[in-house]
Amino acid sequence: MKKVAVFLFALFLCASVFAEKKSDKKDSEGSGAKEKITGVLDSISGAINKAGSKVKEGVGGKVNGDNMSESFKDAQDAAEKAQEVITPEQEYYIGRAVAAKILAKYKVYNSPKAQKYLNSVCHALTSVSERPDLYKGYFVVILDSNEINAFATPGGHILVTRGLLKCTDSEDAVAAVLAHEVSHILLKHSVKAIKTSRAANAIIKTSGSLAVAATGGNDDAKENLDGFSESVDSVVSSMLEHGYSKSQELAADSKALELLAAAGYNPRAMDSMLHLIEKNTPKDAEASGFGKTHPSPATRLKNVSMKYGKYKVNDTSASREKRFKAIKSQF
Image (tube, rainbow, N blue to C red):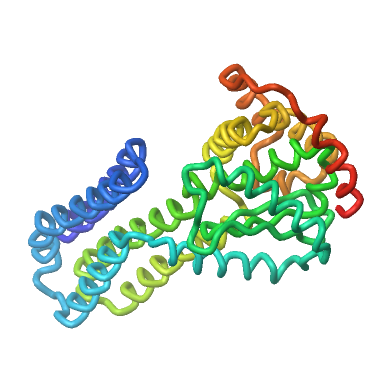
């Protein structure tokens, strides 16, 4: 009977994870995201009710009441946290914490003129977006590094390396870089990662409480399961190393084209930008910088090439050439 209980626990864990992945396909902003997580948690609750008696029967009733109570309390706390709505204020402070980690690795490049220029381009893009205002606004910082990379946090912090800026050959190309990062914020990619982490943590803790029962309340088993659930918190940190998913990066490129067109920039600047990145990225740099955190330029070029036809914009980049040349030396 104990084997049956363990099998039920394993089956429940797989079913819960499958439920989360399946619901992710229907995920949408706002209420859609909340419904996704609520659905996963409902699956957890149902599984507990159905499997609880079987698990207890499988261990012959040798369950430590204190351990069970504590374990299920942990699961309940995790479930409640997973259902919390992340407010704009929370987005900002989460973003500030992520930015602090990035700035612990990179130094800020001191060029007030260049920073002011980038923030003006960023403002042109965000002002035509669906979220023109954040809790404390958007803010671009230049990182003093020759590495080709850029980051965006949910709170509106955008950090771009000098190495990436040096790849640009026009203001429209600069706008393409910033539009991509702004798109990550607009599409709430960081927030979704945090919500997924919370939902996964709830699943793990709830599954852990069942496993504690299946081991008769063994303290070592509980400690190992708690250690595993805590590792989920590293999801956000790993984003700094591995970036967003491939689908999210391509979605950010697609959204960037929309922003560029709306702000009067040439969407095809994304094409030239990606070619420049490909040209300037060393062949041995695939394990670092853009090569580590973004899909290959070739993949991204193929993605955007299918979408240019949607945008009919007059090319006015020549009118911005003088302004760009004046600031280019600052990069």
